[in-house]
Image 1 (spheres, rainbow over the protein chains, first blue to last red):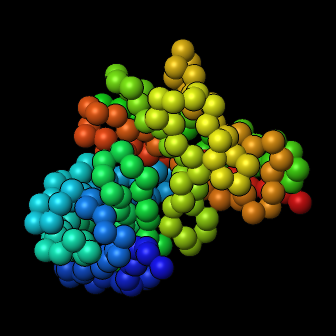
Image 2: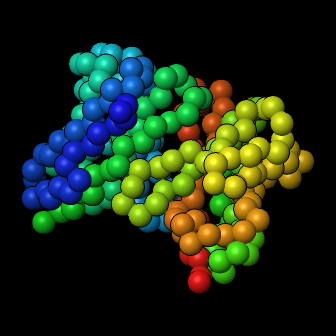
Length: 112
Length: 114
């Protein structure tokens, strides 16, 4: 079955530590996205990539980094510069802009 | 830039009664509008989408939404709520001004009473 796989489901970060969230899709989608979900704030766009080896900052990119070396993969690194990383992170993809988004099941990141 | 406001953070209904989730949008261009649903501990699922065709859009699970340009609204309705409708619902807008990137509302939590 085609879909988006995010791992791990739960992740804990120590102070000063970088952590990487995985996102893999087998839908052959060109575009991939990372959203952060906080209670009462909806989803906010962190980074997006419309094609391999290219990505752009979203609305809240500070403290995060991404890479897009393969079409199927769009990992998100939460760096130590992100002072409030506790949130639910959702990865998404679509075939092209303005088309239906497919979402992964998310990663809950917490700070120890 | 486009934006969306969900007017109710929480809606509680009895099973079998109608559901109304209100959404107002702001867009300087012809917007595309979406409703997504998120069940607990799951990703988001598209309920329905409006893209300048019929103003009354029918979605999955008996939901529908009506695009009203004069009121800048895109309210989501269902005639009869089911227990499985308990979830978080997001109204979403996109337009060409932001390369069609999606702007999400803050969400409406729906609880269904037996």
